[in-house]
Image (cartoon, rainbow, N blue to C red):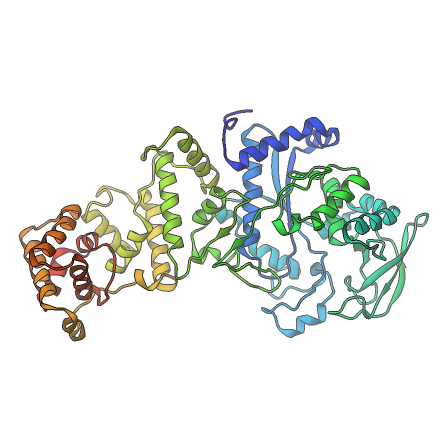
Length: 554
């Protein structure tokens, strides 16, 4: 099946499993022949959309790419579920928007000028960001599909078979719901959450409905009673039924979702039964007509699950303020979908460790770090699927994220940081600006991280003068160590980091002091804190003259 035949990456494994299903499902084979493999996802644009949804989008994008890599036609589509009702007040909006509770999102005005609707605004906030994450995707509107009549066939089947669907619900939940499984949009008040369709005329193809005062607890209906066609945008199917109806309507080959949807008796279970028994359509991968499969695990931030409607957690749009897009994509691609991700870029060293993982993968991809053949294959595929833009012909210039955080605090601006890196041999002196693009981006991001999110241990300011209270903390043996360090730095005009590190221990032994006490005194003098960056590297970066100047103030 091409170059990814033996890949162990989860996206390639899923791609092959999706293709293999054709052999057992003639209907799927027919659809694929017409339109290729559709990898599908959907999101209700109810408010600020969190990074957890981004996990699903990157997963689906990776699967579509993996399908194309084995030589088949595939694309990823994300649909805005804009016919869903506004069911909770949005904490980011004024109370005046509460008048629209119960109304489809697509029929609510945008809170910001320049967008067609509430749904259009919140959906585009995230989709405009897809380019940053290298997510290749086509966008569509569920409401538009209703209005164009795409769902008409499925709606008729559902209404013709509502009693059978009631039995499916009874099988899962123990009781039959008293519903036809269709929600009209009230012709008088425009609400969809308050309507109850109670009669279906198969011959006339009309539903009778009521917009009931107390149909739901959170908003009142207007009391209107009417009769209408269910077709061409007159209303919508409830979520679990709609999910099943989308699969044959769109021709979906693959659609994952969060694990909460994949619990027994959850929305996926019911949708599978309706797709199989009522619509006679094979549910998309990872489900079959009889097996539910697995959803992907949660993406939590500091152990907290996120919510779109409540606006809780890290927003997808804001996520790149906390971590670069290519690093977040790498995190999602390198982690199997069935593994929980808990990532906290604020007040922890998660971001440093994640950059270290990325840097290692990049070095392995370009043959700059030796590992086993299987590890090479794994890292290369992760790098290919997570890279944003064209992969360069040679490895980008690297410095660690933690060192970038140090150098920007020493230099105070990016140009000076580059000059220091060249001066001390961390990057080639002849490196041109085009070769430094990724490095400059890392330094800028490290500066943002230090200024806004970094734990205290990574933040410092180099002393201009040694404060008097710091001088008082330094004991005689520590002072002796510092004077020996000053003499060493004066004698050796250009010190080597490793040699200097060894010299620290020589100095400590010669004075009979614990090395830790020596380090503490040095940090006090340099930055007024007990701890700081790795001392030898720090001294080389600051420059020996600055260190000598500060010690001479003691």
